[in-house]
Amino acid sequence: MMKIVYTGEMDPRLCKNVLGETIPALAERDPDVVYLDADLMSCIGTGKWAGANPDRAVNCGIAEANMVGVACGLASAGCKPIVHTFGPFASRRCYDQAFLSGGYAGNDITIIGTDPGVTAALNGGTHMPFEDVALYRAMPGATVIDVTDPTLLISVLSQCVDRPGVKYIRVGRKQYAKVYEEGSELPIGRAVTLREGTDIAIFAAGIMVHEAMQAAKTLEAEGVSAAVVDMFTIKPLDEEAVASWAKRCGAVLTAENHNKYGGLWSAVSEVLAQRCPVPAGYVAVEDEFGEVGPQGYLQERFGLTAARIVEQARAVVARK
Amino acid sequence: MEAATKKQLQALAVRIRMAALEAIHSLGSGHLGGALSIADVLAALYGGEMKVDVNNPKWPERDKLVCSKGHAGPAVYGTLAVKGYFPYEELKTLNRPGTRLPSHCDRNKTPGVDMTTGSLGQGTSLACGMALGDRLKGRDARTFLIVGDGESNEGQVWEAMAFAAAKGLDNLVVLLDWNKRQLDGWTEDVYPMGDYVAKFEAFGFDTVKVDGNDVEAVAQALERTRRRGGKPYAIVLDTVKGAGIQEVADTAMNHSIPVSDEQFERWTAQLKAELEGLEG
Image (tube, rainbow over all chains, first blue to last red; front, side, top):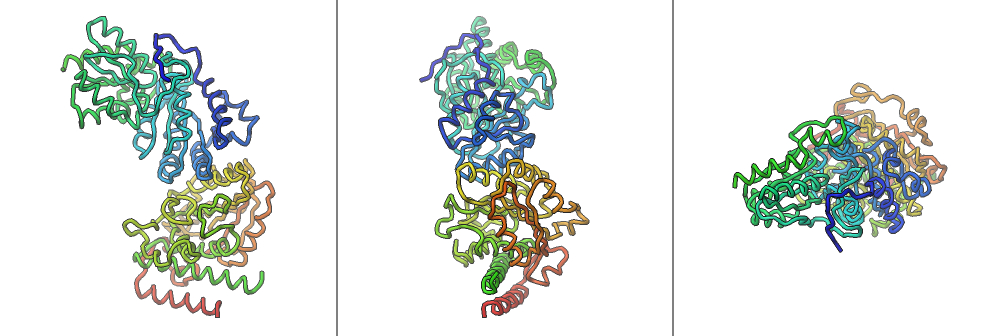
């Protein structure tokens, strides 16, 4: 079952609470699931359950590289590890371990990196990964997910547990606009068309899905018909969706909470270049480091807004 | 230890040295020094201490070996070949295109290799996860982790040691190959790490130091790790890089060295003579 219920309203659930409920639920459903964290259990509400289930939850202390290695060792022993820490530590800090002890060695693990990009907000530039997608995209066989809303988070997390390879899920801990009806199942690797359109196709991921939907409304009022496609799986990319929408609309825009290098824009461009070269553009971070501030300010600061999508969409359509 | 058992282990160590030498010579050069230094501990492990089944290398209940100094692959392969995990002749495929015996250990390629290693330090955390996994699964199995002394420059080693102690992984046995040399020279000159025994003790390990090239001493140290006392075990193996072939041991920079046909034949003859002395 999958139902789109987007209205622009926020989903009342905080993703940190969704993680705090979903991880224990998965562990209770499957005796092989083991949860590991690096002293951030309290940030996603798993601490209480972990304390009561020390044989299923491992606090690895503030040592992320070791945590990922331990998770890979657990995988070789037949466990299904779910690892959590903040995005920069779940990507840059432990990349070599995820790459070699995980991907290369054939140990299947799920890594959750919370607070991607500007959602790191008040933790600031040191905690603000704009490159995590690029890193995990470059890992052979990895799966890379940018979460759209709490319902999608639950769906992909339960799929990742049994999916081979290294799975990287980036998700903010706060609220997202509600896109999918609760209980919807979103198969990994399949893009979801949220809105039909004929003039330009906007491929969006993560918090930018909501911005893209708002932008499409504005564009419609201006007489530009924009399709919006949720590209929550950045790897493996739904190449058919990219090619078919590019053919139908003849123009493409991507929108992501990430550096313009190596993320969704790169992934979509690779498909366009090979299969359907059409005018295309992006809304992404212009190769900068993060900085501190409220998320709203940061979205303005880095151009991750509906207004920016409208502007860039107009420019791309003008090139048709 | 009975004299016959001791001789068997000593003979196995010689066979492992011969096999590692054969593999490396087939290629012309390789990581001979650090392969030779761990031949005795491998003999003690696969000569009786480890619970393994050569016919079922992936048996979940088995004891596991992680050779975190993955460049000592030829010593591990030599051991596995001698024990019959794959044909002895296959040793000569080391590093050849399509081989099952890559320079560094690979669990997906070589029958009997329990974990992929090579990027130094990473095997330590993997071994912790394997030991923890066995514990969570209720298996009566131990994980043996061979770490190089040069390798222990890597911070990840000490993150993993802290983890092992914090989680009371008493089914983990860390075997530190204190062979005193690393790629660039003597560890005391390149990057002195201080007193390993004191370090492991401070981390909360049940720690002993033994002559790591005395297979009987190693076997006895391993035997006492069968008891589960709530602490992980560390055995600091006082070894010589190149042990068992005097010329290699006497070569100062012996991390990775060429092996000529003449050297191979001479060293093999020496090892064979040693073997005959042990086996009669």
